[in-house]
Image 1 (cartoon, rainbow, N blue to C red):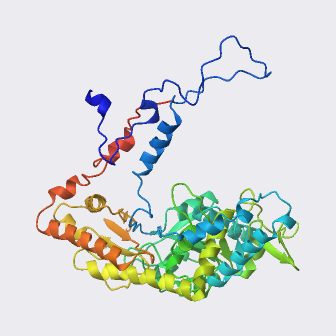
Image 2 (image 1 turned 45 degrees about the vertical axis):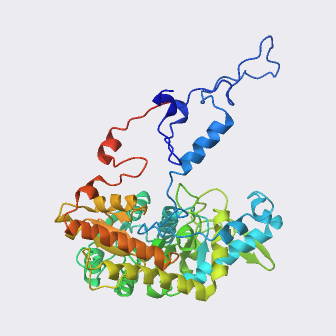
Image 3 (image 1 turned 90 degrees about the vertical axis):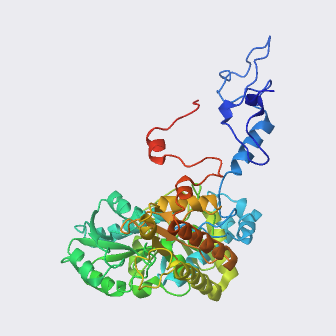
Length: 495
């Protein structure tokens, strides 16, 4: 046999080609040879060869199973991705989401036949209202950025119907998630930047400079805790100034996992906030979804929320219509949102209870500070005088003096079987490494991560840097020239 036939697969390490690179099977399972001496008697056009690879079912099944073994997921190992809250999803959530009464319903059914599903949605709205202190809740948005869009459209509708349509400016910190200014631009707003480079936070002084007289300001968009992993200690004063000028405070809820059960955003001045159910309340996350990004608003913004919200009318639950609330800006998407995510999120809330959710955020903050305290002598800490929240921020400043960068550190983590942290974000901190361990990781996992990071720092100090530049070496693919790969992709096969 030649090596071309034997291939390079060894043990459980498969070298898997594309489906189109397989040799066609003698009898494939997709297209069939035309039958001799027959005619088409269906009255419709004859089926044509659709061009899929001619393979047998076992070949296709094994192909995708082998590819799945190359994926890294939260079920595979530690995933300390900053600002993304990649945490364990309890399987109880999956069990309840698969109950026949939930999986067997359709959004076009008469509402009288899905009262249980509507009651679940109503209960979830109530939990989110209680946890945020914001009484109006709409579950419709399909993900975090979609929730941002819903929140800003609610604010825009409020201003328009109250004679304030001239307000066209959104205040946004320079450390914000990229979706914040993008969403504001999609809504037709101009973005005015609040500088945070000195402290990592929004200060009253810098906020006043961005606010000006406030007559053209519609809202500010701030994440709290912010993308530097810090709590915005002056945000309540900033919110008062914003409200006095006639603007609204939109809080990006991506980092609510650090606050849930401990702090209500309404108490520091928030008017509108989206919640990433798939982050804070442990629903499947990544790979294109499904996500879920409900929005919560203060009482005076409730008339302008998107449609529909679930309301209770005597003993019946129903979905609102525009006849019920004509001031709404209308529907944001088809149907009522990602129902499976609602089931999972409410299961998570009920299984933890109020005290359990408080412990969730407390443990997330504890784990992040444990990492920060353990690595403070090995890596540069950009804000050393601050306690972090649920994620900690390091940089490559010390290692860069020896020619090792954040990218080298991230690639070396892969060699040790750990998914890298978020790198080079937030952009206001050079060479940043944003680490979020979440509350679901145990001491042994976090200790191993710390040990690996200390080993990397030690190797760099001792001049053992060549390996850092070469890692990873044990993965199915070695390190790529990522810029060149993005600009000059090589496509092996096409349809």
